[in-house]
Length: 278
Image (cartoon, rainbow, N blue to C red):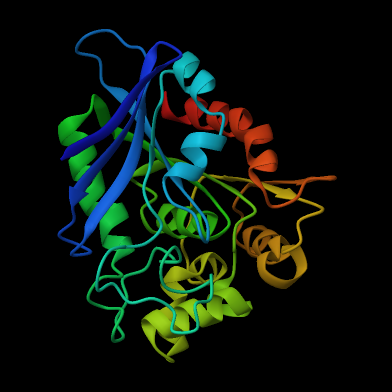
């Protein structure tokens, strides 16, 4: 693992790191904030998954999480959103919603994507092992959150591994990718035309198929330009109501899809996670 940079922040350390990934077959870059702590202490870990077009840098530079993480004693890890590098395929039309920056947190099964686009394995297996080895992380206390495509990733991963992640939250998540254009393009491209294979990567479908978590926190900007066409939080609300999953869905008047929105409510989410991480 290569250290790209480290900076002191709120008594802790914000680092950016690079390694060669066995899952993706590429170099991957991620960021980790470690708050101030006593020697030998092991700290709970919050995973933050970013959205379309993003890298680790978006939340690292604009998420405004470090003050709260320092106070609450939380490590925050931000992976990239897709494999990158020479030879990694991209959307042939150069679209922003598929290919580079748009891994959708799945393990692709279709050519030419299957060789590198294995973000599910990277985020759920490879990177946690690396973080547990190199940082003062208590891997028995993990939680997960994300934005947009990353909100989709946080919800589906949290629903799939409820015994691993003590808290799950999202900002403006794609809750039912099998029912919206972004998701239909991504899941169809990476996983093929069989919609049954999509269901384990669709939060609403996972809940319909029996997945359960103790509760969910979702913030959604009411002025989000993608609200009606791509996000559809009402579908998650209906699925949670039918399944008896407590959902705190907060529609935030005047807020859009940007990091101005995310940074405003980031501390709320971190406190919600801290309360459940212990």
